[in-house]
Image (spheres, rainbow, N blue to C red):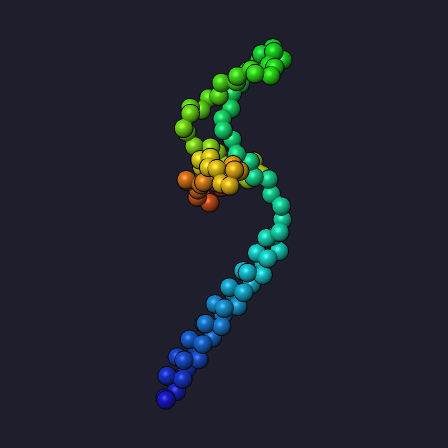
Length: 112
């Protein structure tokens, strides 16, 4: 093997090691936050009403929401919209199937 071939092989190995180290650093930095609890909430819809109407609500009252039947739910993490989904039942428990995940750039745009 000539010198330039050795240098090329060494450079390739060095780049491979750098990429592996960077990946390892990213994994370690993520490990720090993986167990941090967050609040996940689902919103079926919302409405606005005067306090007068709110105080008149009782068992059996129906509150009309601004969202129509069959429209997707909003999925929030710590108050930030991250996805839309639909209600599913799994083993007699409610769940949500994500149908659309908000892109990271869109989430950042909504924060402003």
